[in-house]
View 1 (spheres, rainbow over the protein chains, first blue to last red):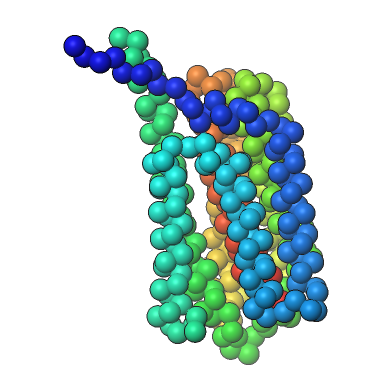
View 2 (view 1 turned 30 degrees about the horizontal axis):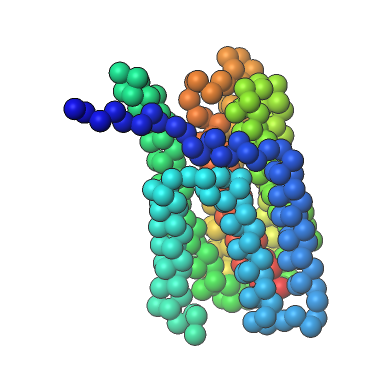
Length: 107
Length: 194
């Protein structure tokens, strides 16, 4: 009475196939526009200091997760793969903050 | 029996991809440490030139745009590979390699200009941390270009069908990773400094 296992289906590639070249081009245009905003923001005198840094970091994060989600297809990947990626990312951010705190460079 | 075949076909492929993701996750640590080091030392100039005098944001913006564009060509190569369109695959892989080389050319030009203006690895902690961070990223791009050129050659000689494994997918993941790391470096190193 062994239960038949489900055949392995590559669900990631099945769903990723729903995105095509048209979507990839649109994403590229979106990324280009965001980059334009980023560079433009550094030349606007009224946005300076902490506000500028916050804006630049938010825009960079938008680009980062757009590439990761759609070009690297992470949003269609299994939980394990997502876990690996976020483990590395959170680990790097933690390391980054610890180094800066250790040398009193953050506050 | 059919189930066993299903597992035996898919599991090794998934393992390779998972291993690549694990490798990329570990790479985050490297770059996280280098970026933190750069931020620690960015103000330590030792009398040498600093970011305000050296950085040419419009030039680096164009370089960044070139690298971002290479992510588009890479994902189009991946799409062609999935469709088993060998000609389109070669075109997009070659385009990605070309864009990567253009980015590297820009980096070599930038480094040469900085050295001419008095910034070297040993000038100041700022110089050391800047060259190590961006040079380390450039080395990753160079490795990616080598892999892409190899793929183009293999594709033109024997083809890169899906049944031969997932090399295009793995190289694609690596290439996009190089791109997302640059997104962070460009913002933190170049834009926030201005």
